[in-house]
Image (cartoon, rainbow, N blue to C red; front, side):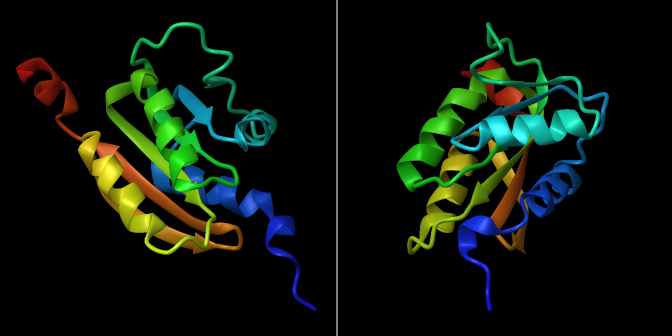
Length: 147
């Protein structure tokens, strides 16, 4: 018998996000989304001590090298999480977004939003809970300075 979608192994998502963003224990990471607390705790259990949530990090200063967004999210919720996490990310940050919705065309809409925010899509990996999309900012500081 198949397991329900919501009971899938969350550790696989954490492993995928760590691998795609090349997150090391030296990097500062920030997490957002409805599953941010679970993701935060999973990272802390693995020894990532420089991780925070948008609720626990007081002032956004573009100091985080990696952003992770997880949870059961709609397009609106993912866009809100991206907007919320963006000020915390450095000019050359990596980001991973768990897209678990079956909504038609959601992946393409998230991809367009990431590109609009200065990210270049690197990879997408399917896992039990959905699709993890990863992207990197490259030259975002130069674009920001020109504006």
